[in-house]
Length: 113
Length: 113
Image (cartoon, rainbow over all chains, first blue to last red; front, side):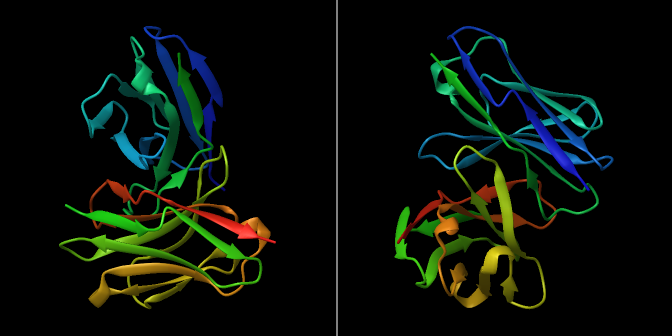
């Protein structure tokens, strides 16, 4: 069966520091991968998605970037964190051949102070 | 562009009572529809989905939802609430062939003993 991992689970970072969040998927090949952010009172917002290695699409302009160095690895980064980057970051995957269900990871709680 | 409206950010019911969480969507083309559940500090878990076919969809944990095209609704129901149902519930819509999953703002369900 497929599993999705995210780490770290919790992160507290100062403003202006860099960020790297990692997501990996097991048990499937060539998945579509997604990064969402859940901010308090604002629901879930799609940040990036990827349909293959090195292929990244950005949904909203922001202080973040994403990379996909391997087929089942998706990384969310920032060079300098802002207070507004605080939130709950969720990675998700779906079968590439299908465009319906997305399956979510356990999430990373990021607090920027 | 598609959108999702969940009526009621907080819903409270007694244990054993009917659960009804409302979701209305806006889409110019037939969508895929989803309900996810999120327990505190966890990722999202798929409850059920509608893609095509039967409009009454049964999911996990005794939940079901009915797709009503004429009302552009996809309300979630459960005949008898359990304490373990206390969580946040998200309705989402996805256009066929598109990558983006658009979420509602979520409904927090509280179960009273």
